Image (cartoon, rainbow, N blue to C red):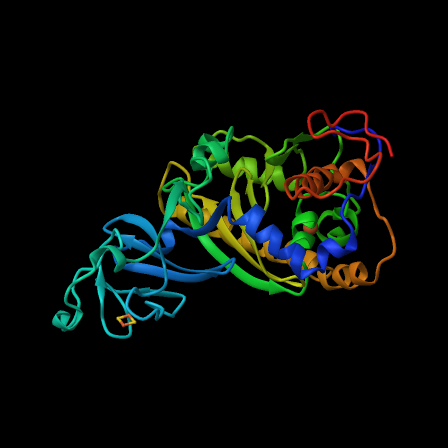
Amino acid sequence: MFVNQHHLQYLLEPVHYTDPAQLDREIRELMVPSWQLVASQSELPRPGDYATLNLLGHSLLIRNCEGTIRAFQNVCAHRHCQLASEPYGHSPVLQCQYHGWEYDSSGKTKKIPDARCFRPWDRDHSQLVTYRTETCGDLVFVALTDSPPSLREWLAPNFDDLERDFSPPEWRRCWNWDYEAPCNWKIPLENTVESYHVAMLHKKFYGSFYPSEEKSLHVLTDRYTELTYLSDTRMEAWQARLRKYLGGTPTNQYVHRHYFPNTVLVTTDSFNYGLTLIPLAPDRVRIVLRAYTLHGKTWNPITRLVTLYAGWAGKKYTLQVHNEDRAVYPAQQKGIEASRQKGVLGTREERIYAFQEYILKSLGLPLPVNHGCRQSDFHGTSV
Ligand code: FES
Ligand SMILES: [Fe+2]
Protein backbone atom coordinates (compact mmCIF):
# COMPACT_ATOMS: atom_id res chain seq x y z
CA MET A 1 0.00 0.00 0.00
CA PHE A 2 1.02 3.57 -0.54
CA VAL A 3 1.34 5.82 2.51
CA ASN A 4 -0.50 8.77 0.98
CA GLN A 5 -3.95 8.64 -0.56
CA HIS A 6 -3.83 12.06 -2.21
CA HIS A 7 -1.53 13.59 -4.77
CA LEU A 8 1.50 15.46 -3.46
CA GLN A 9 3.19 18.73 -4.16
CA TYR A 10 6.38 18.71 -6.22
CA LEU A 11 8.66 20.32 -3.65
CA LEU A 12 11.81 21.20 -5.59
CA GLU A 13 12.14 24.14 -7.95
CA PRO A 14 13.74 23.88 -11.41
CA VAL A 15 16.70 25.87 -10.05
CA HIS A 16 17.52 22.96 -7.73
CA TYR A 17 18.40 20.92 -10.83
CA THR A 18 20.50 23.55 -12.57
CA ASP A 19 22.27 25.79 -10.06
CA PRO A 20 25.99 25.11 -9.43
CA ALA A 21 25.69 26.58 -5.90
CA GLN A 22 22.84 24.14 -5.09
CA LEU A 23 24.94 21.20 -6.30
CA ASP A 24 27.88 22.44 -4.27
CA ARG A 25 25.74 22.42 -1.12
CA GLU A 26 24.28 18.97 -1.91
CA ILE A 27 27.81 17.57 -2.27
CA ARG A 28 29.26 19.27 0.81
CA GLU A 29 26.29 18.96 3.16
CA LEU A 30 24.51 15.77 2.02
CA MET A 31 26.92 13.48 0.16
CA VAL A 32 30.31 14.06 1.77
CA PRO A 33 28.92 13.44 5.29
CA SER A 34 27.21 10.16 4.26
CA TRP A 35 28.61 6.75 3.27
CA GLN A 36 29.49 6.29 -0.40
CA LEU A 37 29.46 2.94 -2.21
CA VAL A 38 32.80 2.97 -4.07
CA ALA A 39 33.86 -0.60 -4.85
CA SER A 40 33.31 -4.32 -4.35
CA GLN A 41 35.72 -6.53 -2.48
CA SER A 42 35.54 -8.89 -5.47
CA GLU A 43 36.91 -6.14 -7.75
CA LEU A 44 40.10 -6.16 -5.66
CA PRO A 45 40.53 -9.86 -4.81
CA ARG A 46 44.34 -10.07 -4.38
CA PRO A 47 46.52 -8.18 -1.91
CA GLY A 48 47.99 -5.30 -3.90
CA ASP A 49 44.96 -4.83 -6.17
CA TYR A 50 43.75 -1.25 -6.25
CA ALA A 51 41.23 1.06 -7.89
CA THR A 52 41.33 4.83 -8.28
CA LEU A 53 38.40 7.18 -8.65
CA ASN A 54 37.34 10.76 -8.37
CA LEU A 55 34.51 11.01 -5.91
CA LEU A 56 32.81 14.32 -5.16
CA GLY A 57 36.07 16.25 -5.51
CA HIS A 58 38.11 13.67 -3.58
CA SER A 59 40.80 11.70 -5.42
CA LEU A 60 40.74 8.19 -3.92
CA LEU A 61 42.84 5.07 -4.10
CA ILE A 62 41.06 1.96 -2.77
CA ARG A 63 43.49 -0.88 -2.10
CA ASN A 64 43.49 -4.46 -0.91
CA CYS A 65 46.06 -4.29 1.92
CA GLU A 66 46.83 -7.87 2.97
CA GLY A 67 43.16 -8.84 2.63
CA THR A 68 41.64 -5.67 4.11
CA ILE A 69 40.22 -2.98 1.86
CA ARG A 70 41.53 0.47 2.76
CA ALA A 71 41.03 3.89 1.21
CA PHE A 72 43.66 6.60 0.83
CA GLN A 73 43.72 10.00 -0.73
CA ASN A 74 45.42 9.39 -4.06
CA VAL A 75 47.97 12.14 -3.38
CA CYS A 76 51.59 11.59 -2.43
CA ALA A 77 52.97 13.27 0.70
CA HIS A 78 56.11 14.25 -1.21
CA ARG A 79 55.01 16.58 -4.03
CA HIS A 80 51.30 15.89 -4.44
CA CYS A 81 51.50 13.52 -7.43
CA GLN A 82 48.73 10.96 -7.81
CA LEU A 83 50.12 7.68 -6.48
CA ALA A 84 48.54 5.86 -9.43
CA SER A 85 46.43 7.07 -12.34
CA GLU A 86 44.84 4.04 -14.02
CA PRO A 87 41.31 3.07 -12.89
CA TYR A 88 42.39 -0.43 -11.80
CA GLY A 89 45.83 -1.91 -11.18
CA HIS A 90 48.05 -4.14 -9.07
CA SER A 91 51.30 -3.43 -7.26
CA PRO A 92 52.88 -5.43 -4.46
CA VAL A 93 53.90 -2.19 -2.73
CA LEU A 94 51.88 0.97 -2.20
CA GLN A 95 54.28 3.25 -4.03
CA CYS A 96 54.08 6.64 -5.71
CA GLN A 97 54.57 6.54 -9.45
CA TYR A 98 56.79 9.69 -9.50
CA HIS A 99 59.85 9.31 -7.19
CA GLY A 100 58.91 5.98 -5.64
CA TRP A 101 58.01 6.83 -2.05
CA GLU A 102 56.54 3.73 -0.40
CA TYR A 103 53.76 3.59 2.19
CA ASP A 104 52.44 0.92 4.55
CA SER A 105 48.81 -0.09 4.95
CA SER A 106 48.17 2.67 7.48
CA GLY A 107 49.53 5.31 5.06
CA LYS A 108 52.83 5.83 6.93
CA THR A 109 56.00 6.18 4.86
CA LYS A 110 58.14 3.08 4.55
CA LYS A 111 61.00 3.35 2.09
CA ILE A 112 62.08 6.77 0.83
CA PRO A 113 64.57 6.65 -2.04
CA ASP A 114 67.75 8.57 -1.19
CA ALA A 115 66.25 9.35 2.21
CA ARG A 116 69.36 11.32 3.33
CA CYS A 117 68.06 14.28 1.32
CA PHE A 118 65.09 14.60 3.72
CA ARG A 119 66.98 14.83 7.05
CA PRO A 120 65.73 15.55 9.64
CA TRP A 121 62.79 13.30 8.88
CA ASP A 122 59.31 14.76 9.70
CA ARG A 123 57.37 11.53 10.13
CA ASP A 124 54.17 13.17 11.39
CA HIS A 125 53.69 15.20 8.23
CA SER A 126 54.78 12.57 5.76
CA GLN A 127 51.92 10.16 5.47
CA LEU A 128 48.92 9.56 3.28
CA VAL A 129 45.49 10.89 4.15
CA THR A 130 43.27 7.89 4.94
CA TYR A 131 39.49 7.46 4.87
CA ARG A 132 37.23 5.18 6.88
CA THR A 133 36.06 2.13 4.95
CA GLU A 134 33.42 -0.38 5.98
CA THR A 135 31.85 -3.28 4.14
CA CYS A 136 28.40 -4.80 3.84
CA GLY A 137 28.94 -8.20 2.27
CA ASP A 138 30.95 -7.61 -0.90
CA LEU A 139 30.07 -3.89 -1.04
CA VAL A 140 32.75 -1.41 0.04
CA PHE A 141 31.71 1.98 1.41
CA VAL A 142 33.90 4.99 2.14
CA ALA A 143 33.27 7.90 4.50
CA LEU A 144 34.79 11.13 3.23
CA THR A 145 34.50 12.68 6.72
CA ASP A 146 34.68 11.16 10.19
CA SER A 147 31.13 12.17 10.98
CA PRO A 148 28.87 9.32 9.76
CA PRO A 149 27.64 6.68 12.19
CA SER A 150 28.81 3.13 11.54
CA LEU A 151 27.74 1.63 8.21
CA ARG A 152 25.53 -0.79 10.18
CA GLU A 153 23.65 2.14 11.69
CA TRP A 154 23.49 3.96 8.35
CA LEU A 155 21.92 0.94 6.64
CA ALA A 156 19.70 0.10 9.65
CA PRO A 157 17.41 -1.72 10.00
CA ASN A 158 18.39 -3.63 6.85
CA PHE A 159 22.13 -4.17 7.29
CA ASP A 160 21.90 -7.91 8.01
CA ASP A 161 19.53 -8.56 5.08
CA LEU A 162 21.74 -6.58 2.72
CA GLU A 163 24.89 -8.29 3.97
CA ARG A 164 23.26 -11.66 3.24
CA ASP A 165 22.11 -10.55 -0.22
CA PHE A 166 25.47 -9.17 -1.33
CA SER A 167 27.79 -11.85 0.12
CA PRO A 168 29.68 -14.58 -1.71
CA PRO A 169 29.61 -17.46 -2.20
CA GLU A 170 25.80 -17.43 -2.49
CA TRP A 171 25.77 -14.07 -4.29
CA ARG A 172 28.57 -13.20 -6.69
CA ARG A 173 29.25 -10.01 -8.57
CA CYS A 174 28.80 -10.65 -12.27
CA TRP A 175 28.99 -7.25 -13.86
CA ASN A 176 29.76 -3.53 -13.40
CA TRP A 177 28.18 -0.89 -15.59
CA ASP A 178 29.64 2.61 -15.42
CA TYR A 179 28.22 5.37 -17.60
CA GLU A 180 27.49 9.10 -17.66
CA ALA A 181 24.23 10.89 -18.40
CA PRO A 182 23.63 14.55 -19.37
CA CYS A 183 21.37 15.46 -16.47
CA ASN A 184 21.27 16.44 -12.83
CA TRP A 185 21.96 13.50 -10.45
CA LYS A 186 18.45 13.76 -8.95
CA ILE A 187 16.78 12.94 -12.29
CA PRO A 188 17.88 9.27 -12.52
CA LEU A 189 17.40 8.94 -8.79
CA GLU A 190 13.81 10.15 -8.95
CA ASN A 191 13.26 7.87 -11.93
CA THR A 192 14.39 4.79 -10.05
CA VAL A 193 12.18 5.36 -6.99
CA GLU A 194 8.84 5.54 -8.80
CA SER A 195 6.88 2.90 -10.70
CA TYR A 196 4.64 5.37 -12.55
CA HIS A 197 6.82 5.45 -15.68
CA VAL A 198 6.92 1.65 -16.04
CA ALA A 199 3.78 1.36 -18.20
CA MET A 200 5.03 4.02 -20.61
CA LEU A 201 8.82 3.66 -20.82
CA HIS A 202 9.04 -0.10 -20.27
CA LYS A 203 5.91 -1.23 -22.09
CA LYS A 204 7.95 -3.48 -24.40
CA PHE A 205 9.10 -5.44 -21.40
CA TYR A 206 6.15 -5.21 -19.02
CA GLY A 207 3.25 -4.35 -21.32
CA SER A 208 1.05 -1.46 -20.20
CA PHE A 209 1.27 -2.58 -16.61
CA TYR A 210 1.21 -0.65 -13.34
CA PRO A 211 2.49 -2.60 -10.34
CA SER A 212 -0.59 -2.90 -8.12
CA GLU A 213 -0.86 -0.72 -5.04
CA GLU A 214 -1.99 -3.69 -2.93
CA LYS A 215 1.28 -5.47 -3.61
CA SER A 216 3.49 -2.38 -3.30
CA LEU A 217 4.59 -1.66 0.26
CA HIS A 218 6.20 1.75 0.68
CA VAL A 219 8.31 2.72 3.68
CA LEU A 220 9.13 6.43 3.98
CA THR A 221 11.62 7.64 6.57
CA ASP A 222 13.91 10.64 6.92
CA ARG A 223 17.01 8.49 6.06
CA TYR A 224 15.76 6.13 3.37
CA THR A 225 12.70 4.98 1.47
CA GLU A 226 11.81 1.45 0.45
CA LEU A 227 9.49 -0.38 -1.93
CA THR A 228 8.75 -4.05 -1.34
CA TYR A 229 6.81 -5.46 -4.27
CA LEU A 230 5.13 -8.80 -3.63
CA SER A 231 4.87 -10.02 -7.13
CA ASP A 232 3.23 -12.77 -9.07
CA THR A 233 4.44 -11.64 -12.49
CA ARG A 234 6.15 -14.16 -14.75
CA MET A 235 9.48 -12.48 -14.07
CA GLU A 236 9.37 -12.88 -10.28
CA ALA A 237 7.87 -16.38 -10.58
CA TRP A 238 10.81 -17.39 -12.78
CA GLN A 239 13.27 -15.87 -10.30
CA ALA A 240 11.59 -17.65 -7.38
CA ARG A 241 11.80 -21.01 -9.20
CA LEU A 242 15.46 -20.38 -9.87
CA ARG A 243 16.14 -19.62 -6.23
CA LYS A 244 14.40 -22.78 -5.14
CA TYR A 245 16.35 -24.81 -7.69
CA LEU A 246 19.61 -23.38 -6.33
CA GLY A 247 18.76 -24.44 -2.78
CA GLY A 248 17.32 -21.18 -1.41
CA THR A 249 13.94 -20.10 -0.08
CA PRO A 250 12.06 -17.91 -2.59
CA THR A 251 10.66 -14.59 -1.41
CA ASN A 252 8.78 -13.55 -4.58
CA GLN A 253 9.83 -10.03 -3.68
CA TYR A 254 11.45 -7.11 -5.42
CA VAL A 255 12.92 -4.82 -2.75
CA HIS A 256 14.17 -1.38 -3.79
CA ARG A 257 15.86 0.79 -1.16
CA HIS A 258 17.07 4.34 -1.56
CA TYR A 259 19.48 5.52 1.14
CA PHE A 260 19.64 9.30 1.08
CA PRO A 261 21.15 10.96 -0.72
CA ASN A 262 22.65 8.93 -3.58
CA THR A 263 22.77 5.16 -2.92
CA VAL A 264 20.26 2.60 -4.21
CA LEU A 265 20.28 -1.11 -3.30
CA VAL A 266 17.94 -3.54 -5.07
CA THR A 267 17.37 -7.20 -4.16
CA THR A 268 15.28 -9.93 -5.78
CA ASP A 269 15.28 -13.73 -5.73
CA SER A 270 18.07 -14.06 -8.28
CA PHE A 271 19.60 -10.71 -9.28
CA ASN A 272 20.70 -7.85 -6.99
CA TYR A 273 22.45 -4.59 -7.62
CA GLY A 274 23.85 -1.46 -6.01
CA LEU A 275 23.68 1.91 -7.71
CA THR A 276 25.76 5.00 -6.96
CA LEU A 277 24.98 8.38 -8.52
CA ILE A 278 27.99 10.69 -8.57
CA PRO A 279 27.30 14.26 -9.71
CA LEU A 280 29.96 15.66 -12.05
CA ALA A 281 28.25 19.00 -12.82
CA PRO A 282 24.70 20.36 -12.33
CA ASP A 283 23.74 18.72 -15.63
CA ARG A 284 26.03 15.68 -15.65
CA VAL A 285 26.06 12.51 -13.55
CA ARG A 286 28.13 9.34 -13.43
CA ILE A 287 26.11 6.22 -12.67
CA VAL A 288 27.82 3.06 -11.41
CA LEU A 289 25.86 -0.19 -11.18
CA ARG A 290 27.31 -3.29 -9.47
CA ALA A 291 25.26 -6.41 -10.24
CA TYR A 292 25.19 -9.75 -8.41
CA THR A 293 23.66 -13.08 -9.38
CA LEU A 294 22.52 -15.88 -7.14
CA HIS A 295 24.93 -18.81 -7.17
CA GLY A 296 23.07 -20.70 -4.49
CA LYS A 297 24.07 -23.33 -2.02
CA THR A 298 24.53 -26.24 -4.41
CA TRP A 299 27.21 -26.40 -7.05
CA ASN A 300 27.46 -28.78 -10.00
CA PRO A 301 27.92 -28.27 -13.76
CA ILE A 302 24.15 -27.86 -14.27
CA THR A 303 23.74 -25.24 -11.54
CA ARG A 304 26.80 -23.49 -12.97
CA LEU A 305 25.09 -23.30 -16.37
CA VAL A 306 21.86 -22.13 -14.75
CA THR A 307 23.63 -19.33 -12.85
CA LEU A 308 25.47 -18.26 -15.99
CA TYR A 309 22.15 -18.04 -17.79
CA ALA A 310 20.57 -16.15 -14.86
CA GLY A 311 23.44 -13.65 -14.92
CA TRP A 312 23.11 -13.21 -18.67
CA ALA A 313 19.33 -12.73 -18.45
CA GLY A 314 19.64 -10.31 -15.51
CA LYS A 315 22.21 -8.25 -17.40
CA LYS A 316 20.10 -8.20 -20.57
CA TYR A 317 16.99 -7.12 -18.68
CA THR A 318 18.82 -4.50 -16.62
CA LEU A 319 20.50 -3.03 -19.71
CA GLN A 320 17.21 -2.84 -21.57
CA VAL A 321 15.26 -1.23 -18.74
CA HIS A 322 18.02 1.19 -17.70
CA ASN A 323 18.65 2.23 -21.31
CA GLU A 324 14.93 2.95 -21.71
CA ASP A 325 15.12 5.12 -18.58
CA ARG A 326 18.37 6.74 -19.68
CA ALA A 327 16.87 7.81 -23.02
CA VAL A 328 14.46 10.21 -21.30
CA TYR A 329 16.96 11.89 -18.91
CA PRO A 330 18.17 14.57 -21.41
CA ALA A 331 14.56 15.51 -22.21
CA GLN A 332 13.74 15.89 -18.53
CA GLN A 333 16.85 18.01 -17.91
CA LYS A 334 16.01 20.27 -20.86
CA GLY A 335 12.39 20.52 -19.72
CA ILE A 336 13.40 21.46 -16.18
CA GLU A 337 15.81 24.11 -17.49
CA ALA A 338 12.95 25.76 -19.42
CA SER A 339 10.13 25.07 -16.98
CA ARG A 340 7.70 27.51 -15.46
CA GLN A 341 5.57 24.67 -14.09
CA LYS A 342 5.20 23.78 -10.42
CA GLY A 343 4.90 20.06 -11.11
CA VAL A 344 2.90 17.48 -9.16
CA LEU A 345 3.50 14.00 -7.75
CA GLY A 346 1.09 11.06 -7.68
CA THR A 347 0.87 8.68 -4.74
CA ARG A 348 2.87 6.15 -6.74
CA GLU A 349 5.65 8.79 -6.70
CA GLU A 350 5.54 9.48 -2.95
CA ARG A 351 9.12 8.25 -2.47
CA ILE A 352 10.19 11.24 -4.58
CA TYR A 353 8.28 13.49 -2.22
CA ALA A 354 10.13 12.05 0.78
CA PHE A 355 13.45 12.53 -1.01
CA GLN A 356 12.68 16.12 -2.00
CA GLU A 357 11.56 16.93 1.54
CA TYR A 358 14.84 15.45 2.83
CA ILE A 359 16.83 17.70 0.44
CA LEU A 360 15.01 20.89 1.47
CA LYS A 361 15.01 20.14 5.19
CA SER A 362 18.62 18.98 5.32
CA LEU A 363 19.82 22.09 3.51
CA GLY A 364 17.62 24.39 5.59
CA LEU A 365 15.75 25.53 2.48
CA PRO A 366 12.13 26.67 2.80
CA LEU A 367 9.37 24.16 2.20
CA PRO A 368 6.49 25.51 0.13
CA VAL A 369 3.68 26.99 2.19
CA ASN A 370 0.93 24.41 2.82
CA HIS A 371 3.09 21.62 1.54
CA GLY A 372 0.84 19.64 3.83
CA CYS A 373 2.91 16.64 4.86
CA ARG A 374 5.24 16.28 7.80
CA GLN A 375 8.21 13.93 7.51
CA SER A 376 7.15 12.38 10.78
CA ASP A 377 3.79 11.09 9.66
CA PHE A 378 3.39 11.16 5.88
CA HIS A 379 -0.36 10.68 6.28
CA GLY A 380 -3.39 12.45 4.92
CA THR A 381 -1.45 14.71 2.59
CA SER A 382 -3.53 16.83 0.34
CA VAL A 383 -2.46 19.76 -1.80
S1 FES B 1 55.58 13.02 -5.68
FE1 FES B 1 55.38 11.02 -4.89
S2 FES B 1 57.38 10.34 -4.62
FE2 FES B 1 57.60 12.35 -5.34
FE1 LIG C 1 12.57 2.55 -15.25
